[in-house]
Amino acid sequence: MKRSRVSGLSAWLQRALASQKFFYGIIAFLTLTAVWVAISSLYPMAFDEDFHVGIIKLYADVWSPFSFVQPDGPAPFGALETDPSYLFHYLMSFPYRLLAHFTTSETAIVIVLRFINIALFVAAVILYRKVLLRAKVSPAITNTILAVFVLIPVVPLLAGQINYDNLLMLIVAVVFLLAISIREKLVIKHELPAASTLWLVVLLLFTAVVKYAFLPIAVGVVFYLCYEIARALKKNDELPAAFLQNAKKFSWPLKLTFIVLLSVSLILCAQRYVGNIAKHHDLVPDCAIVLDEERCAAYSVWNRDNIYSQNKPDTEIRGPIGYTAIDWTWGMWQRLFYTLAGPTNDYATRRPLPIPSIMAIILIAFGAIFVLWFGRRILKEYPVFLLFLTVSVLYVAALWLQEYQMYVYTARPVAINGRYLIPLLPALGAIVAVAYVKFFRSIRRPQYSSIFAAVVLLLFLQGGSIVTYVVRSEPNWYWHDSFMQGANQNLQKLLKPVTIGS
Image (cartoon, rainbow, N blue to C red; front, side):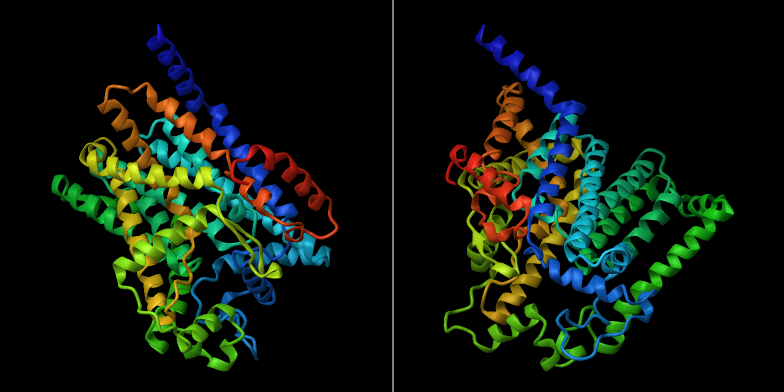
């Protein structure tokens, strides 16, 4: 009787987690919480929002990115003429121009631009669901992963503000979709689809000038697809000829579209990356190399690192293992689950709430063990996970290397931010979730997997999403003398008594 009740509860939860209604609820919840952040949080928010808006304003003065000129005097945004991460700012300058034509209210403009960023992030989550389903992940696991993802406290804070990571999140989902589509044709028909491949190339090139940190992701996708192409060539040595023949069948409008987009994207990449290498011998040259130290001192990030490097403490620099174990891993975890204010309030930080943050440690620790344990079986059943792993390993390795080099330069663990992992967390989460399902099946208790998922979601509500932000915040974190300032204080009074550790 007891076993039948557990099976009945498990079956009901399985249907609920797999349902479209549950996914619509996830999207509605994400939208509501991100909008709450957007309309209540004082500008600028912590994740460099004033930096992004400042550059958007500068690009609003030119019609072509090629005509952009570095402003004279102090450089609070760094060496913009050589910065390859600018396409988001250029694109966002157009709605900014339109808004500035109708209003002079900075608050109104900022909130509308935040809404655009929310739309980008929500669209990314919707597309990520398609990515995971195409990877053969079940609807129940997919929805559970996305529900946990939107409950990470930093996620709605990022979605609700102006930041190029929101566009990057959307593009990563589209890149995965295209890569999976190409892989399916290579595996099933031993063909390389011309249209999908060219769209992917165009997207990779354009995204390289949205954020240069995308480059390891692009390399991972290309590396993975080259592996699949090499496998397909063993079964069809006429694959290159078939690709060209397929491309020749494109309509003239489609051919012209690809010619224009490939040309523009190549020029944009060459202008920054090739130009930087030719002139400064670096993909992303240091601000002081392009300008000078006096002008770059106005750029807060550069100035901080420069001051740190000149005033290193006497403590010994940790090696890679010590840095990773003590500084990097802890920093990444903490800065996914903490909350903070913007520069107006001196970047006041508040520690994570205990339940979701500790749950994350437990889930990741056991999940890593299960992934290693069932790794071969998982990759055999979900071959697309190799794409996720390839991209993630290269991206995380590049991120870690850059941050470790900065640590050695400054003797301080700077620039460690868990939000840098957000574009890949749903993909990595899917691998871990499947490993948990494999574990429950291995102990002959598959019915407990859906119950476990429900318990995890309930525990994450104890501080998940904007709960940490609301219960840890102070009134001066919000728009002054606004309705939302009072609304947040009232919400705080409701949430604190029912939130453990608040």
